[in-house]
Length: 391
Length: 135
Image (cartoon, chains in turn brown, red):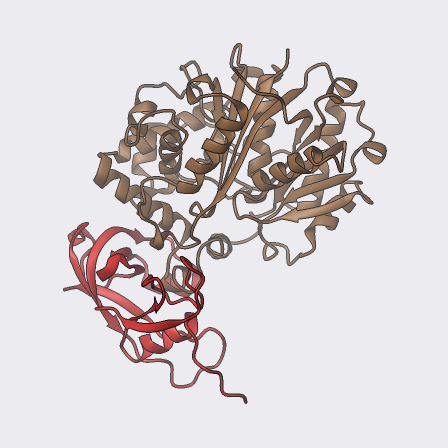
C-alpha cells in the first residue's frame, strides 16, 4: 500500500508559542533550532545542515527584510544556504516542501525547514492590516476586506449551501482548545465552552472572536535527510511519503465556488497519489484551522468526509482526541496559535512528536500515518504532506 | 513626464471606475472576458484585446459584515462586503451600502455606485472607489 519514503524527518523543534514579550523573531527561531538539535544530538549543525528553508511572512512586523540569513545567522546555521519562503500562512509548508525537494534532488544530504513570526508587539489593527496583505490589494483590501472577512465569505456560502451552523463552527474551537490545553507549547492552554464561543464578539460575521486563530509569536523547524541516512541520526525517523502543492487565484472573488479550496484539493490529490494512501488510511491530521470554517472545509477537501458534511464530522466527535481521526491534536492554529510563518513546520513538528510517541498527554495511540494541510491566504497557496512512522 | 498609453490592467480598470464604468478586457482570439482586465489573455496568452463594458448589476453570491477593520476603515465598521456575480459570469468584490446588514440575502440583486476620482492625488494608490447597493 504505502509508497516509498521521499525523505525522512530526523528531528523537530518548536519554541514556546504565545505572547512572548521582549523577544525578536530571530531569537524565537534560535530556540526552535536549539530544541531540534537537543532532541537529536547526533546532528552536527556545522557539518550536517547544508541549507535552511525558512518560512516568514511579514517584514512589516519587525521592519526586517532579508530574513533567510538573519534567521540562519542567529540560529548559528551560517554559512549554510539560507532561503526565506513567503506564501502567507503557508510560508513554512512551502519551506518544508522545498527542503524535501532539495534533498530529493541530491544536492543536499541534510537540510532544515522551519518558520517563524513575531506578531504580538503590534496592535490588532496593525496585525489585521499586515495579515490582509496576503489577499488581493487593489480588489480586496482596497474594498475594506480583511483576512477574517475572506473566511467569513466562505462561511456564509457554506452555511447557505450545506446548512453548516455557527454551532458546528464553534465546536471546532471547543475541540481544539481541549486539545491545546494538553500541549505545554500552546499559546492558550485553556478549555472553552460552547456557550463562550457562541457569545464571543463578532469579528467578521458570521465569524466571532472564538472562530479565529490567535495572533501568536513562535517558531518551529524540522530536520530532513535521505531515508538511507536517517538511521545514522535516530532510531525513530518519520518518513515523508507524499508532498503536494498547488495555487489558485489571489482574489477569492474570482473563484467558481467559495465552499472548498481548489488548491487544497489538488495538493491533497498529489500527496495521496505520491504516498499511495487514501483518506481512510490517515490516523491523524494537523489541518489549517485559521478560522473554524477552514477546518470544516479542510475535512471535505482532504476527503475525510463528503462535501458539506464537515460540520457533522466535528459534531460526532470523529476528529476529537479519542475519535476515529483526531485532527489538530496540537490545539491547531486556534489554541496552539498561529505565528503565520511558523505554522506549516509546527504542524510537521506535531506529527513528528505523535508518530514517535513524544506527544505526552495528547498522544494518539498506534498512530502510523499523519497528514499536514497548510493554507496560504484565502487558499491561493496550499500544501499537503503525508508522514509515516518507520518502526 | 512621458504619456503612458492606457493598457488593459488595474490602472485602466480604476480610470474607468472614475468615469462611472465597469470595463473588462475581451480577448479577440478566444473570446475570454477578464474582469479586472489583464494585459494578456490568461486562457490563450494572446495580447490582442478589446474593451467590453459590463453592466453594473448583479446578484450577491456571499457576504460578510466586517466588525474588526483595518485602520483606514475603522470609522466605517461595521460594514458589509460581498462578492457579486455580474453578467458573463464575471465576479467582483466590494462594500455594500444603503442596506441594513440583517436585510442582506444571498441572491439579492445589486447595482454599483461609482465615486469620482480624487481631484488632488497625493500618494499611491489613488484608485476611485465603487460600491454595491440594493437594486
